[in-house]
Image (cartoon, rainbow over all chains, first blue to last red; front, top):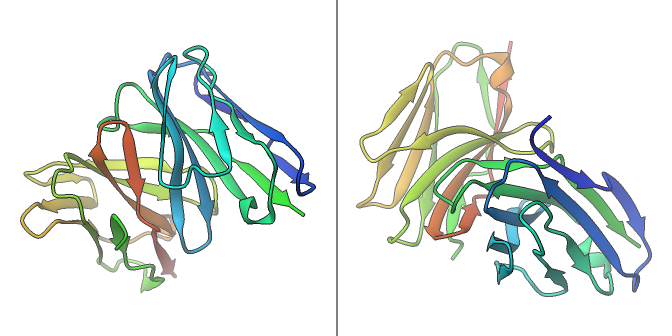
Length: 113
Length: 109
């Protein structure tokens, strides 16, 4: 089934640990995005990539890093998790830029304790 | 000031009611606008794009006012299944989709 897959679906993580959230799409979309969603704040853009090999910072990039080695994969890494990174993380993709429909993964619920 | 602002609601309306949501954006250079729907913290899904001339899709009508920098969503004849959070989305620069915090709609029997 075409779409975006995120893994894991949920995770409890000790503070200070390193964690990589995985995101894979099979739609051959050029652009990919990572958002976090917190109650009352909506979705906030963490990082984005407009094509394989390039990435950019969003609204809240601190504490996160991304890579885009190929078209399909866009992992998000928390180098040293902190409790304020407790959130629901959504990966998304668009065929080109932000002027086309965005497709989202099912989300990763992360709790940092 | 947030780039995209929405009234969080909730809007609590009876079935059959007409309800309207507004959203304001700060970047006048924004070119693309959308409404997304999100159910119970599931992933957001596109409801409709918003075009300069306004557009309609069944019971849903979206309008854009560039001069005042706001977009609106009108839902006619509300159904129970319309209960969800509606997210206003703006594309201020290429490869950046900025979401509002969402407006929650509750449709009661």
